[in-house]
Amino acid sequence: MHPLGDLRRTHTCGALRLADVGQPAVLLGWIHRVRDMGAIIFLDVRDRYGVTQVVVRDNEALVAEAKKLRTEMVVGVLGTADKRSADTVNPKLDTGDVEIVAAEVRLLNDAKRPPFSIADEGPVTEEARLRYRYLDLRRPGMQQHLILRHKVAMAIRQAFDQEGFVEVETPILTKSTPEGARDYLVPSRVHDGQFFALPQSPQLFKQLLMIAGMDRYFQIARCFRDEDLRADRQPEFTQVDVEISFATPDVVFGLIEPVIKACFALIGVDVPLPLPRMPYAEAMGKYGSDKPDLRFGMEIQELTPAVASTTFPPFREALDAKGVVRGLVVPGAASYSRTDLEKLCDEAVQFGGLVTYARRQADGNLQSPLKKGVGEEALAEALTLSGTTAADALLLAAGPADKVAKLLGQLRLHLGKKLSLIDQSKWAFTWVVDFPLFEWDEAEQRYFSVNHPFTAPHEADIHKLDADPGGVRSQGYDIVLNGTEIGGGSIRIHDQALQAKIFRMLGMTDEEAKQRFGFFLDALEFGTPPHGGIALGLDRLVALLCGETSIREVIAFPKTAAAFDIMAGAPSPVDEKQLRELHIRLRNPGGHH
Ligand code: ASP
Image 1: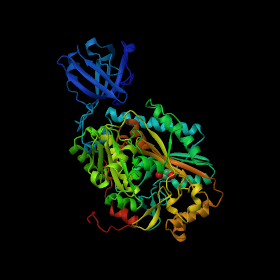
Image 2: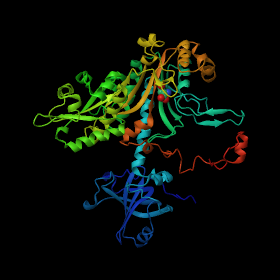
Image 3: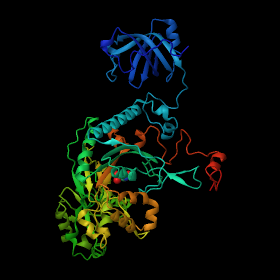
Image 4: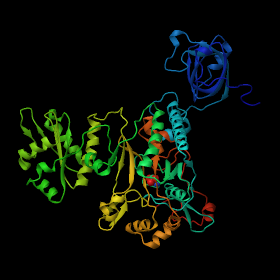
């Protein structure tokens, strides 16, 4: 006989309400909790939809059977919905007004004792959660994450569909497309010694789809990057990948913003449109970051004019080398003890630089370790220039502009957290635009693309490409939320000659470019529409919507920080025969180095 027999679910475990009282009900689910009161046993039965209380009483045989039940066993419960007595109503449960009086509890499957509790969402090691992910995913909180992720994907698909976008699948087995990371490679059995690469993104394919006349493309696409894993990266992740023909940044923003709005509507947050925009130079200048956290102020202050004529050696040297002196105003820090203020300055060392302070004491005296070196007058001007009030203190740093920006940018975030300056209820979006096209790499002595090599230079800067490549802005943009980059893209190069030139500027010979991107350079010559696009990081977006800091919380089966699947045990060794078919011989069988 089928294990379910004649049992058919009448209600989910989240469905019953007062209106159902008196109705017969069959629930199918897991034992969430058991409370044995002797002659009466309460069972909480759980499925994805909720938890319902079942009461077993007035039936000795049934009570005896129920005493054998343990958490996580799979059961079918037949009974009648009843009103709970006033003292047992549970306002925290949707079903909290009712219970089922059991006529039968059928054991559908036994369960081993789980390594951690499903019912209590208390702390469990991540190792255990990942090893027994199917149990971790049984926990109601994790189920909510997966459900919200699904809803986000649905909202995205619907929003794009309405605007005439077509979802097109692009290959997983492909040729290496560069996004600046290492490729995952797949050896070919058929072609001895040759490899596919897993896509780091569908970048070239989506551009080819524009050449193919698809006009508006999107895809919820899996991407693969073999990076040394930093804190919250995954070797495979999901992008909402978009490409649009005849696009300007305005066209792209105008189509993406409503998608973002639709996602946030799912958690009841209204995102006012259009989203603000900020040039990269302003983001670096004011916030020392290309992904500024705009939930709080504390902008970086330019102090150079105040100390322009100083002879104080550290400042003088910085200024003579075309550097800057900049600072941060720490609100309320006038009342800190000297030791506390000095400690605050010491904390900046972890961000790669030295910081000192200046403040006005209650008696009007100026206090600063720089009082002698820089002089009272210049410091007083710095306080005025930066708007440091009698309640605050000013932190100062000197050096090359980009280094000082990064130092103060990180210090700003550190202080924002430490001093609780960040408004946690805010959703602060901004586009960051006008990125530089290239950045110079000292070690390799060549330019790299800040975005990727297909990003178009800013129209107004094209004439500078030869004379001042470092000064050329791109038509790249990022979308930033609460200090996190949630997406990025650009208007692309659609002109073959310009694309070939950019490859050369990146240090590629025409031969190398042809070998790697020949198919794409060829395609560009067959009538390429001007186009542009973007990719949003779906994992990050969903994590933010769930209020989680780690993307592992919103990926069903993630890998560890060491790029390992501890549940399945992957990667793993393979048979000698498989390797032979792939024309591969291991240098270190068994993996010893
Ligand atoms: N392919 C880019 C990325 O993965 C996004 C884009 O330019 O559309 O970051």
